[in-house]
Amino acid sequence: MNTTSFTDLNLAPEILKALTESGYTIPTPIQAQAIPLVLAGHDLMAGAQTGTGKTAAFALPLLQKLLPFASSSTSPARHAVRALILVPTRELAIQVEKSVREYAKHTHLRSLVVFGGVDIKTQTPHLKSGVEILVATPGRLLDHIEMKSVQFSQVQMLVLDEADRMLDMGFMPDLKRILALLPKQRQNLMFSATFSNEIKKLSAEFLLNPTLIEVARSNASNENITQKVYMVAQHDKHALLTKLLKGDDAKQVIVFTKTKLTASAIAKKLQREGVSADAIHGDKTQLERIQALEAFKQGTVAVLIATDVAARGLDIDQLPMVINYEIPSAPEDYVHRIGRTGRAGALGTAISLVSPEEEKYLVEIEKLIRREIQKEVTVVPQHAVKPEHPHHHDHAPRHYVPHPTSKPKAVHDAWFDKPYEPSASIALIAQPVTPVTKPKAKVAALFVRK
Ligand code: AMP
Image: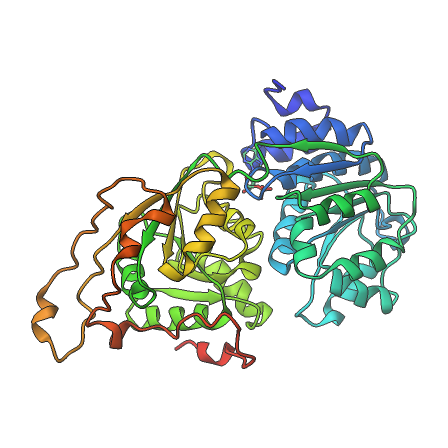
């Protein structure tokens, strides 16, 4: 498709005005494909990752279709819920609604976001005053349904955003309960970064003859992102991370961990080392998460340490770098993680610290993205060695040495054949090493900021 401008897409002047003000000039490929189809009334199964412009791809035609219902009346009866957008996480909910609000700012259409973790009573009055577009996480929406603070008889459009993640997070029963309450006659749009069998099943169940659209291959990772793997022993990861964070291109970095505990520990340790870092994960209160994200966006926090769930859907303009402190065991999560950078055409770097124990996950990731990731072997900086060897302190961190055999297959990398050489620095840089089974204890208390 050769759409060159938003004006070709039959959107109303008030929507176009908002787009111009947001600095959008050219529709992204998913927008160029989806907008005409949604306007024509099709159900959609769209394969698109975050960063492709997928929010506007569903929000713009949705607003266009709801424009006839826009009313300046203050009566709640004139503001029935007409579109429901379900998303897996609070952060994504906030971002999606913010975008909808931005695109709708020159119309009389109202939007609202509801999500868990905050006092439900603060949301109810807004809901009762009437909104056309409701963005919600499934659990909290069910709470509102039970409290009878929301009515769905006028819903004509349903969006399931990041449907794959909703399934991963176990929202299927909640989704079924919600969808059973919606009018049968409605348009359904489903967005997913991956097309697993479960997603296909969900699509067969909820969509009516959906048109399938995909931008790039859904399982391919973004071309704008330079991907690198550092082969490093687990106990050397923190020292390497510290070194990487000192690089010129590491002004604003998201570091991914598998567990909340590791995220907390890294943030705390970096803070002690004088790095402005904070963690964002499910054990933090909603307010703490929003504050951490805001501080990161403003640049007062340079490093945000996040778990997969917490980071899902984070939209940070021009994030230059993500670092996988641990690579995920589910290869799709790798694609999601690196999709935080290189958004909307910008360039990004995704660095993964891979210990020999994690090599099997790397193999799976490379299979999924159908490419081999450039491997580097590095000499871990020696400044963090034990104090009983003071002479080591004099050494500036040594340069990383790229693997001599350029790009060997990860499985046959000679580096892995070498016996393990734990550095003298173990005692000081050892992490509470990545327990795969996460402890039940809450860790939020670790984070009281001075
Ligand atoms: P999304 O994939 O919806 O999370 O969007 C990723 C980022 O791209 C967001 O910051 C959007 O504001 C931005 N964006 C979306 N569509 C466009 C466009 N057509 N032109 C410029 N930026 C866009």
